[in-house]
Amino acid sequence: MARHERLTTLLDMLGQREKIDVESVAAELDVSAATIRRDLDHLAEQQLLTRTRGGAVANDLAYDLPLRYKTARHVPEKQRISTAAAADVAKGMVVGLNGGTTTAGVARALAMRPDLSGTPGLTVVTNALNIAHELAVRPNVKIVVTGGVARPQSFELSGPLATRVLSELTIDLLFLGVDAFDAGAGAFAHHEGEASINRLMVERAERVVAVADGSKLGRRAFARICETTQVHALVTDTDADPEAVRAFEAAGVEVRTV
Image 1 (cartoon, helix red, strand yellow):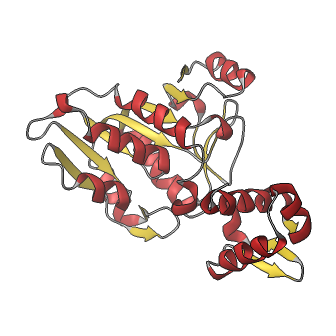
Image 2 (cartoon, one colour; image 1 turned 90 degrees about the vertical axis):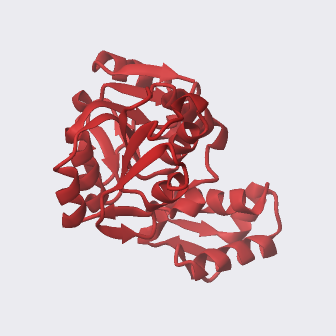
């Protein structure tokens, strides 16, 4: 297991258990206790956990991992989802992208499509600094950035400035990244500020497509973005729980597994 995968696994364990022990985790991951101590020390320096004697305990950030750690999770699934979602875009569309690793993947997939050439091939509205940075060098993409206050964990902009810009725009197709999505309860984000901006993006969009790997389905997070009925389609991976998929279909959401 590569180090970045091990770090992500440790944070996942901590999020589920709230407390972990060096010796037991070392045995579980089949690495030395010294390796786990170094990993925990590194994560503590990043303020992602609190070190204790013999282990670590969760702090608030452990439940909302920075984007650099999220990127290493479910990579093949996210790539398939991003490619499939990007295929829905037609030339000349106004496309909305909120923050997240899967929506960033959609942005990269759009940038690679030769049929979207021209000036501009499409317009992208985003509140995510990393997506704007990645697409800004593409001459065929017109970038509209919402403005607002940046949140370091996700690179998303939120607040009154973002609200003001979005309230003046109309989006043809929104790709909605989520932290959790439950067929009965709706789509969720960890942070209330991001949820508020994402909710406004949903309201400004003609069509909303949620992009989420199977690990996020059937779950809830702190702040609700929107109701399930406001999402027209869901693109997820083939490992998604079949019961969760059926629940979304029963709620009227078109589901594609890739």
